[in-house]
Structures are given as C-alpha cells and as structure tokens.
Length: 414
Image (tube, rainbow, N blue to C red; front, top):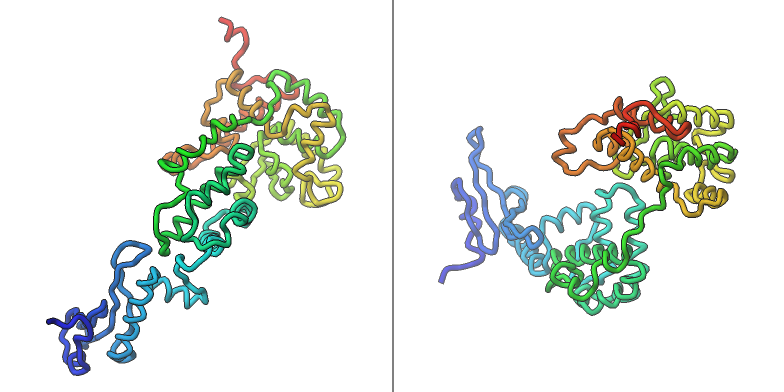
C-alpha cells in the first residue's frame, strides 16, 4: 500500500531534481533551476480554500530555512485549520495584522456581525454607514438572537425579529433583513452550515408581504411649480438665515444637507460656480453648480453677516441644523411642504414648461447615471447647458417668467 504521508527522506530532499514532488497531505517540494545555474528548493502547501472554493498554494519557506520536519508540522497546522473551515493563507495574513481568525461555527451572531462590519468598513463611503449598521442590528436583532451561536439562527428567529417592525417600519425592516442576510452569508463562507434563513427570494417572500404592499412610497411634499414666484416673494421678506438657505436650496435645486454644509471656500464668484466636494455628495462624486444671478444675490446678502467659513451659520452652532428649514416652513404656515420637495417642483417645471433635455436636468439634480458603462462614457457634467437652465429657473422663481429654452403657452396651445 502506497504511503499517503511522509514520502520523503532528508536524503531524498537533497537529491531531488527540478520538478514538483509530493510528500503527502498537501505538502510539496518545489525544485527549480535559476538562470545562474543554481538550483533552488522550497516547500509549498497546496489546498482547496473553504472561503474561495478554489485551489491555492502557500509558501512555507526554502529548505535552507525550513527543514523537512518543520515543513511537515506547518502542513499539519494548515490541514487542521482547513478542518475548522479557515483558509490557512487568510489565517497567516490575519496573524500578521494581529487579528484572530475564528471559525464562524464557534461565533455568536453578534461576533459575526462585528467581524463583517470590520471587514467591509474600509470600502464604505463614511463612518456613518457603519454606525447605521451597528445601530439597527443592536436595536432590532441583538435582543432576539445576537447572543446565540450563528449556527442556531434559523427562519423562526429571523421572523421573530422582523415581524415586530415589518408593517410599522417597512423601510427599516427591509434594511435589517438585508444586513442579516449579508452577515449570515459571511458566516456561511466561514463555516456555518445550512441555507440562509434571511434570504428574501423563494424564502421570506412566502412569509412576509413585499415592502411596496405594506406601505406605498410617500414622496416629499412639493409646492406646485406655478406657485413658486409667489412663495419666493413671501420667503424674501423673511430675515432669518434659514430663509436665505431655503432660497439657495430652491435656486440651486440642491439637497438640504449640501446647502447647510456649504462653505465660502467652495464658491468661485468669478466663474459663478459652487463646487460641492465628493464627501458631501450623496453619490460620492464632486458636483459643480452654476449660480444664477438670483443665487449670487443670496450669497451677497449672506456675505454681509459672514462670521466663519460656513455660508449659512446657525444661531448656536457653526452651521444650520437639519431641522432649521423645516421649522421655517412651519412658521410660514406651510407645514405641508418639505425643503427636499422643492427639487420636485424644479423637476416638474422643467418637464412642463421648458425643452431642456432630461440628461441636463438629471445632472442638475446630481442624480447618479443609470449604468456603469454609461457613466464611464459620460465624463462631462454639461455645465454650460446647466448654467442656462439655472438662469432660466432663477428668472422664473423671481419674476414668474424665463426666456431661455422655455415653451410658451401660446406655442403649447397651438
């Protein structure tokens, strides 16, 4: 019967000619001729990775540094890790980084969640995203099965966590389900057995109604575009900083967070441009906003009270709070509106009263381009065309009419 382990002897190692020779159990001696005529010999451990589902090989050192007995011991250690569902190369890399790699079978769900977040956080856009993961899992999942072994998490436990919020907080519940599914998928690669109990398609979709059926999507309340000039007159009579910020939101079609965080250093008055850095944009990409004469007028008013780099400072903080514009609308007796809704007013006006292309409008709203292929080829931001659009919008908001690219009512009637 052929030996499956320890096929080599020390003499055989020294006499080995160029080639690849198996000692058994995944341990190989690799002998190669170098260009200088010297022969090099080194140890390799070949195995099938449990996490990548493909064959890998790990160098164990040259025979000058690692003897036959030590190479066999290292190969045995690798086989032991494989039995525990751990990739030996990943384990070695983790040891170098001072991180302990554990088999998911021995971990609780909370430990798997922490490991998943730590592994993926470098690829997330900001720390806030990681904090949201931790908060939702701590609030809605940990009380039910956070302390249980990840192997014990089944459909009944997932349902117990989701049923409490599925009809009352459908959007949050959907995010929680997706996060639990991702963590359990991570655990499966690490050794957890069985199907993923948080999977939606062909599983939970048979037990829970879809989010769209639980609660219809509520769009942000928007002012009809025809009422915009009258509203802007009322807004201009207000002296609060929040009123100027809301004017700027409307005139630039920007998001509230982008405006309240706007800094003077982002404004180029000569070029009539506001450049919002990528780290403050929802899409994570720098956005240039052409400034109309009316928008520049708002900046001129704020320049007279300039105290810091923030264009719209708060009374008790460096900048306005997220609630400042909403509270302003309430004081104006317009609690039926939201600041974000004015983007819809702008979009409706463009569609119904101008002939600007949808491409220009989507760029003005800083919406993400549909596909990665399309985004790769569309490198420009149509700034010149958007400048004409924003000038027309500013003219309409302040005077109820605009000249460029606007469809006349007489033309439309004919």
